[in-house]
Length: 489
Image (cartoon, rainbow, N blue to C red; front, side):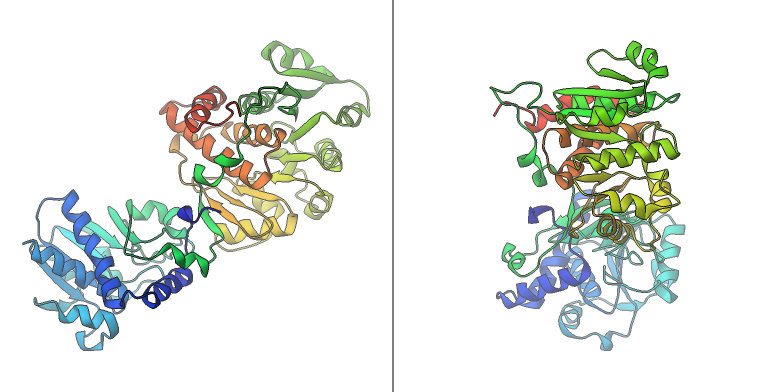
């Protein structure tokens, strides 16, 4: 996958730094390259003001010494507060501390007196324990005083690998190096970082010959090459036939999902509905076909038509034995299948029955509540998504403001383009429909899921405030047009 969107955990970033030094860039130069952008980004955004730089005992603190020196050289009033005795510093951090000509005071809340801006260079992404003592007290005091906080790498107290908060306070700006980390995008970390800047510090792309990331930020660069393209000699069947199970009496969810599948490019879209619901669906849909099921076995006979290339069940289906049966019938076809909402919850008492039935391409799109009904696993969102994908042998999409898409082989993508307006009833049903539409056209499940999640967010962003879920399908063509997707090949 595209390394430009790679998210590196703390160990991978440490290895990238080691390889960079081995390539000929000295460690002291790398630290200079990391600290300099901190000063530059501050100067771009704020007028000259009193600054206190809070420095920790390791390389993050060394970056802070560089930033302080650079700001002082630009005639900014700067002070440094250090968490440990100066003589305990070692290596590159000690070298850069030696270049600082100003005073160094102990890190206490009193060090904030007179400051308007605070640089948090205490701990980086590798922190593995709760923030405590003078570091925690000083940052808490800075937040209480409503001082502007700029974080180096991550806000101290934020775990870079998981986004977990172990004592961090919100930053207005975070400057990190080379690549983002998972914790920059996973909540609550994303909300604590403020504006995020990734600085080029000279790390060569060749590090990816030895560093092999398996976590990525969702971006069109990952999947535009795989978007379905219209063919000049194609027809509606070559563009795929999407089939949605339509529930009753809750009908809106399946209708929105079906329209999303069609707007995502499926050549035909059909909703299979109980006969009693035919008039409701038929009156509300035009280009979407409605197939009424009147007798036992009708659904199995419908599924025997091999022209259905993508299947979806869950939105408005109802939780119970009937939905469980229809889900298993879909999975038995071994065709690309999307399982959402009630299709997942219907297996809460026997999830392994569901997992054992997955023998073909499958995508699950649970929100957190649906996820915990199926998977008994603790940990951060990336860890849980990967576990679920391995266990079920399906692509698992855990929805939310930081949606995670995980494949059974361990690859994972974190999405970051979803606006807050997507927190509206029915938005998840539309997402399931977009995944379905792409799968029906032959897109592979992991990339189809990532594309659908990104398109979903971009469509919501294009609409702005006041969004309703039913607005989303009609926004998809404009987003796809902007990407060059679904164009003639």
